Image (cartoon, rainbow, N blue to C red; front, side):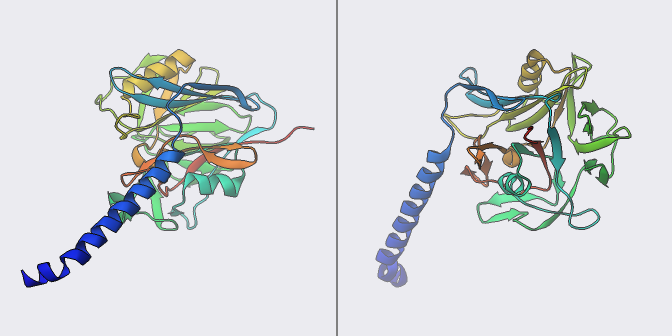
Length: 294
């Protein structure tokens, strides 16, 4: 009791300072969060359109939809190279985008080991080594082996895109990522395991493979965006024109970075370790590059 009485003023001041610091940091992060308003940019880059959509009922949802015309001259895809034969050094999407000068970049495969318990207790940090679940290919080189229970996005050099239910990609694939669930196959909805509202990162392609969609749904942020179900994402991409849809790593990994005015900018509202706008270091990424044509 004497100890508590003696140091109570000091403890109170420390708690007050911590509360003020937390409030200031939160305000800074929230100030960077995208506005909760509809936005459409029809040609954010050549062959690339962007839409921010808002849903208010039954749940609040903020989603970001990228449509890519793969016939665009000079358009290509890139991904992350491992640092050992099978291990990747974790980095944020923004760091990957800056290193590879991409026009659009997102996070890719599920990975392990991983945990996220608190703002100070998580793995991986930047540079920590992790391994991928399912196939990964970059520049035609396969770094992670396919698995039948991890369906894959496969992109050829033309480029043309397809989603492989088997997790294997055909010869000539230049870039590939694996997801965990294919929610639309050959234009038909697949029976889904649950309808949990969650932060999502989803890829869709059309039947001819010359159109690709990236759907990012923000989540875990009350009064801003709760997240979305598999069904919501699948239905939205079907309406856009996708015949095959694949769910990639979501949750706190979900990040969309788009180059604007020569700078890499985060276009969604990441939520890592309960901190809004904090980016999670992840294993690998998918980037869109567009060569300037003379």
